[in-house]
Length: 276
Image 1 (cartoon, rainbow, N blue to C red):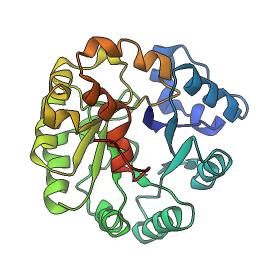
Image 2: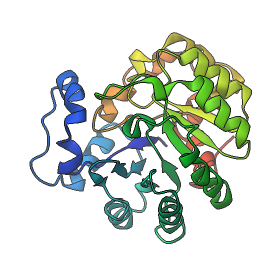
Image 3: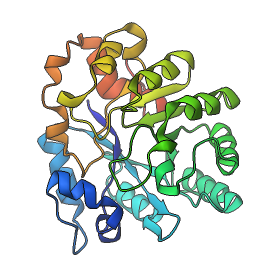
Image 4: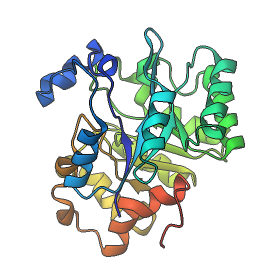
């Protein structure tokens, strides 16, 4: 089984946003002019034998809902065997954000919260995140975020693992944190934070297998690292087949491969019994 822990089924208003101009330059993709059928996303997953995806909602501080929680919930409801939802909230209205997170988890069945710090230009140690961290602990769901530089046209400082993820993990040791995009060019910092904190994990979204930093691959080959890294794509930026190409060249044993592709995600997001 393979689980993609970071993907979007894009709406036109998400796809057309000018902050993604740099990504379109790199990938050659054109913005959507109309709604994308879910069959298109399912076909991309099927081509690479990806069984399940964590679909992210997106909320922008300027434009509001780029992909709404309810739009994600509708896709999940139609295909519950293929998707689960990750909520997005308005970071700048903390109480409303907490209420929306609780609605998404308790009523819509979402499995976690994702906040992308560069989108808000606010580091994860900002006071406005802290009610959400407490709510995630209370609800028993992970906080998913981004680490490393930004491909989109936004500042990168908020993606530093040290001091930001390290400090949040110190303040909320019960909070499960899944840090996506490997942390480059601070990957060694991200690995150090994941080693240090029991509940901090890394996902490989936005990187193909062949572009994973060598220090992360070496970490994945260790017993600790094999339990700390999750597969992700950031689809549609990277499709699933391209993301997985070269997997056999990583030098992971069968147990480490299974943990990376599915077991870690199943355990962390409560998707069912994970094998050991």
